[in-house]
Structures are given as structure tokens and as C-alpha cells.
Length: 260
Image (tube, rainbow, N blue to C red; front, side):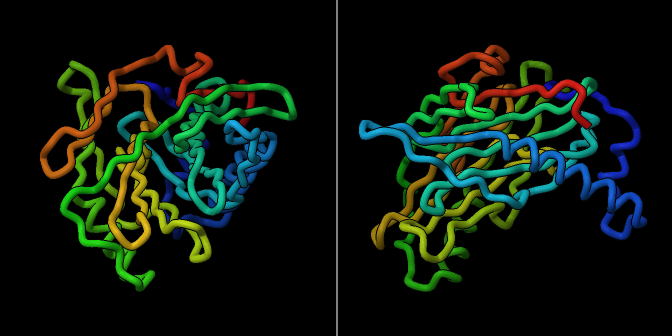
């Protein structure tokens, strides 16, 4: 799998909320360092008329761990445009430092720079599809969230390679890890499918005016990943370890050796 065991000190970060003050302070400091690393990035969406800078959402969407992969701590960050998700990143420790996984959530190309220097060209990362047999979005924002959750519950995400012991069914977090603000041009929510609490795939659900809903899926792993909607296979990606560093892909990993 893509993660390796880490120094025992980071196991403090997987402790429950009632952990002692030193553990809580270490967890906070670790997250602040990850936040500072992502502040070095400039992400823009590319279109025929030029580039549009994305907004970095300063608060981590999710703090996670994955005991099955011996990953004690991780965090998830997001870049948006007009309130809509466009790039998601998961960051976690590995034996030599910190690894970041960046995934495009845009139907248009993205470009990433770090401290002004080119880093990666993201090809479109999602393909929108209509949600079948769904009631039209209601006027109430709170009730639309209920509709979104019901749509997300219709999906099942599985992953892993040919080794039966490494196959898994990802658990859907019942609440979205992000929802577009009330003044956004479209009401959208981002749901995570996790192993432990480690996101393996995300589901975007978006209202289409008052007529219906659409959805899109994106990987957050390089192992094989698939999704069923109402027991029908609607999305499937093979393993592809080469995409970790290849340009012109919707997924990219970045390693920061020596970071703690």
C-alpha cells in the first residue's frame, strides 16, 4: 500500500479527544506545519480565456488515521473557486518526511506552482453525471443537505488489488467534509469514503438549478478503486503507481523529505 510505518511519537495524534495537553499541543503543531506547507502552493484553473486563481481553504476538512496502513495521522485540505471544490489534498507522514496527495476536482485543467515555480499540470479530474431517480432540489438549504446525504448513501466504494486480503469496502462518512457556502453559485457537497478515517475517494454532489442533481467521483489513492450506484458499476479506475509523479495527470503526490 502507499503508506509506511512512522515514528511512534506521531501515534499521539491518533489519541481520542480527551488526550492530555502535551498530545493535543503536538497534534495542533503538526497540523499547523501542514497548513504552512500548503500555503506555498498557488493553484489556478485554466480555461481558454486564461487562468483563475483558486482559494485555499485555511482549515483542515478532516483529521484522519488509518491503523490498517499504520498511518497514525493525516489531514485534508481544499482549494475552491466560487465556493465549489476544485482541488483536494491529503497529507500524512511517511518514513522520511511528509507525503502529499493532490487530486483535481475540476472539469477543466489546473496548474500548480510552489513558490512561483511550476509543480504540476492537472488534467481534468472529474466527469459530471446526472443522478438518476432523484427528487429535484428543494428550496430549503437545510433540506437540500438531507437530499445530498440520501444521494451519497446510494453509492458504494470498493478498492484494493487482486490480493483478497488487501481488498476493502470504504465507509462513507455520513456528513459532508465540505459544503459550498450559501452564496455560492451552486449548492454542492463533498463526501468522503474512507478506510479507517483515511479518504480513499470523494463524491461531489451538486444541485443543477431546480431541476435535478449531478455527481462526480475522484480517487484519493493509487490502488484500484470503483464505485457502484444502486448496485450498478458507474466508476472504476485501475491501480496506477506511475501517476504519483507523472505530469498531465489528475492526481499527483509530492514528498517533502525531512519534514515533521
